[in-house]
Image (cartoon, rainbow, N blue to C red; front, side, top):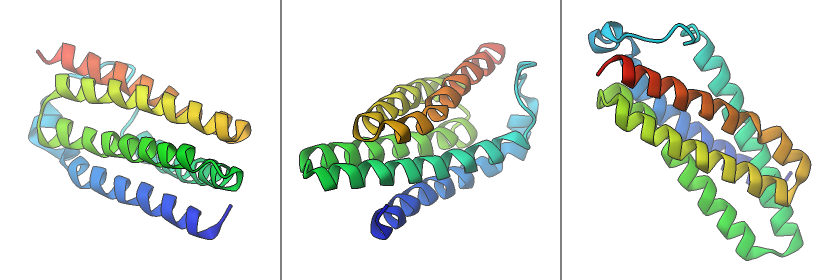
Length: 159
């Protein structure tokens, strides 16, 4: 991996994590404490561990894919990949704002479903550029699928 690519993807994922964490501070809000949540919701301590791991995964695998596309001379593929990555991170960072700040579980479920589709697409694109990196990114769409189910159930329980 080229250092500049790693630094770029690490900066992008770190910025996304920071944007999301600002909104997630409201996890201790009165609104959130009053929500009914499903039994399958993991303990709060699980979320920062999972997301930190996934952000590192996204940064590393995206750097590998971008470098591979660059080395192949596939500049259109590189540009398309970076656009998909930016869209994915925008969806990722927006979920916390819609859910925690906006208090909109139904809308957050829609954002989460879009994020899941985007994450699956990103894993596919990564696998096309570098199959091993693509396989390493698979936990991301798996987790966002779970997050969509969780968001949907919270929305349903709190109508």
